[in-house]
Image 1 (cartoon, protein in one colour):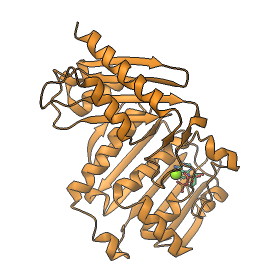
Image 2 (image 1 turned 45 degrees about the vertical axis):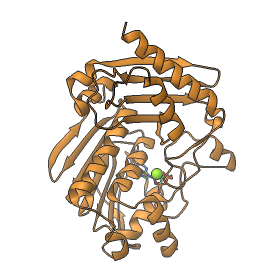
Image 3 (image 1 turned 135 degrees about the horizontal axis):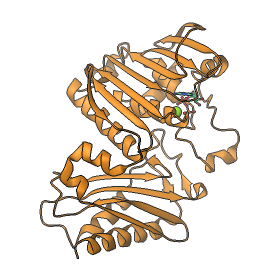
Length: 321
Ligand code: ADP
Ligand code: MG
């Protein structure tokens, strides 16, 4: 069991940013309105993720560290009808197998504290904490030197965390995010639902003011988002934030469709900045491709690519007139 958790940890959490992603997804699933992420030394030394979501009762908190004890799947059919960020039930057991973890959770009825140290349950008792969940992770990979060795510098590890938190904030503009590093707040959103405000935080005023709204749909997909006008864009590489049913995804074909949409307008050495939110029937999507859940398999992908390309190209072209 411990060994299986450690192997899974290699796939789900190879670095602090992976832990942040898993914990923030859990907070989102718990309907948090505010999520705070505190990193110390790039998250290598310590990571604290606090939310004001629904929390867990004592029994659920206990089960949360058991492998495949997800509270989010009830039948095989659920696997093809996924509406939550998590569903595999392996993040918490994996993290607890390779670090010290302290979980404090309150479901507005009772408060529970659970401590794990490198796969071993240290204590489980009643506590007192505000409604929601706080997870405090330290000493990552200290007992697995082969993994520890793959970590890079604190500043690099933090930059990967910041990137993930930016993406999470863009895909959930209605949630307040706060990210700090070694006690200093470096990124904060208001949760008022406005994507431009988050772009402003990330890229400055000129980019935010030149964000062109687009929307479009076909029989199976609805898309909307912002494409920054190519003349403004001072990015040194492209930035494409793509979500599918609010889940962040990586997709080379969709990136290519966006590049195609920009191809007529983009001067040399300029790069698209795009926030693209895709909605589709959950039945068309298979997110169970890889444990890290970044990749998805889509039915009717070609129709989606056409829609993305045409919608973004048309709105860029209109904005230039
Ligand atoms: P999954 O997200 O795939 O269900 P995880 O290992 O990430 O699996 O989490 C295990 C379980 O712990 C979740 O199903 C959920 O019930 C509970 N959980 C984890 N984090 C939180 C949180 N922040 N708030 C409420 N419940 C949580
Ligand atoms: Mg999860």
